[in-house]
Amino acid sequence: MKWSKEQISSFTQVVTGGTPATDKREYWDKGTIPWLNSGDLNQGTVTKPSNFITEEGYKNSSTKLMPPDTVLVALTGSTTGLSAILKIEACANQSVTGILPSNKHYPEFLYYFFKTQRQKIFNATWGGAQPHINQKYVKDYIVPLPPIVDQIRIATILSKAEALIEQCKESIDLIDELLKNTFLKMFGDPITNKKDWQKVPLSSLGSLDRGVSKHRPRNAPELLGGIYPLVQTSEVTNAGLYIRSYTQTYSEVGLKQSKLWKKGTMLITIAANIARTGILTFDACFPDSIVGFISDKKESNNIYVHFLFSFFQDILEKNAPQSAQKNLNLALLRSLIVPKPPLKLQNQFAAIVEKTEVLKAQFQNSLTDLENLYASLSQLAFKGELDLSAVEIDETLLVEDKKQVSTVSMPLDIQKAIEISNKINKQFEGINRITKIPSALIKQLEQWNKLEDQFKHIPKLPEALLQARNNMERIQEAINKAGTTKLPADEETGFNWAVLANRIKERYKNRHFNFEMLHSFIQKDKLVEVIPYYASEELKTNPRLNDTEDLKSFIQTAIQNIEMDEKQQRQTNPFLRLTQSFYNAEKENFTLSLHKEDFKLIKDRTARQRSGIYFSLATEV
Image (cartoon, rainbow, N blue to C red; front, side):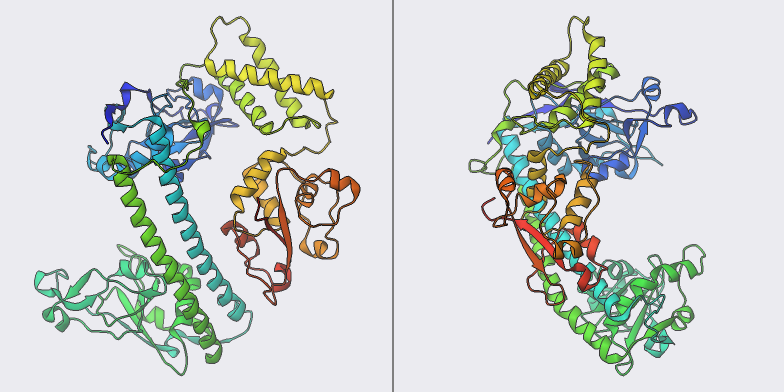
């Protein structure tokens, strides 16, 4: 399939940011305009700025306000070529350029394309101390431009593959968290040693000796290229529990000036990344920047010692002697005082870890397969070699008269008016009839009316503002029909039930959650302001929820097979269907599947505290 290839400047605008004077606090203090630096592009999907500037700072700098769906590209330093997609309205500094939305490209398609170009762009940088590219380089960049429908299909495929990769990474992180929490439950915090285990020097748990690499230079050709694995510091740092791979080998000559350590030896880094550990799964050599620990089988289990080091890393880093770079000496390691729980308990923990590592290895293999699949899909997609005919897409994305959104030339007041309109319009998404008007909405309407009065005598308004005006007229008409204009100032803010239901479905597909988790998610996502969480202990004794509290009512009316009175039956939730179960953490009566952020809320709690009512999406939802 042959697609046209065009320079970016031929179909859209490209803008670069600027920085208000940093010595003028009036440009920064109490700022409300999001302002990005190149490091913010590490978010991938940019939803939070690193800073804010004031309107005065905006007017007195060269920065430009960019709309959502702008594709961002970093121009300088180590971030050069890093790309992201903007999902808020924001401006940026001079190290970021923005490719504005147009009717010729789908933003996510361009974002995923630039992700494949990162290394190529970085290799094209110029400059000595600060390698960089410039705005012209981005403007002149040649990109493939298939039909919009194919751009959407490609972005859809890559987005789904990326989501699978993130889910797999989350599962691996959860396993690591589980093992760390199991360690704490069995042994307590080894730094505080509240379980009062016997304290001994590390050397009493096993022998410690430095690796050997006598020859200089260490990378002499005659030392390398043989059959004996050579493990480097970086391979220990990145290994996790077990060291399963290596990139270099020693020859017979190399082996003679080194030492071959047995499988099962725990390696400890003593330079660069200090006190990182990993256990050999093969016989290997290593340099003197690594210490080998061989546990005394009568005193310790090296898996226990490996997890022990994760708690002592900060202490060892702080106490490490520093010359050109920090490093540990053998004497410091040998004299390190550590808790020594009973060997039987150490071995029990090691057995749990080994079983869990099997599951983790499966996830690691799946992650590798998914990353390889993603790379292959990207390569085929942007070459036009991927069959896209069977890819289902959201047809609402296909808007034929999609106008180019250029906010660069719009006055800031117009931008603010459009932003307010969009926020209000989003609250009414999926709502056919208005029965309750939050006080916060009244304030937003007042802001809109005040700003809108300024534009009445402008002969030609931007398309985005005209659309905003139409939205506001529709909403105002609906409010008038409701016969309500204001609520008391202290009345509780209401929910946009349709939007909230959709976010719950996205977040909790194939997962469990309780009220605390939902409340935390809503707060972080800034969906609504809600009342505090009600503990699961209360829910156990009184699972019937209070109808006067919006969040509780919303969930209660979504639960299937719950006994409802006549009033509740009339208010059955039309947007969401849930099932509820009582989870007994002590008996583990079923397997909880939690979102990574939700797991963090309960990971340090007792089994009794983790028990309670949990919800999940009903199968027909």
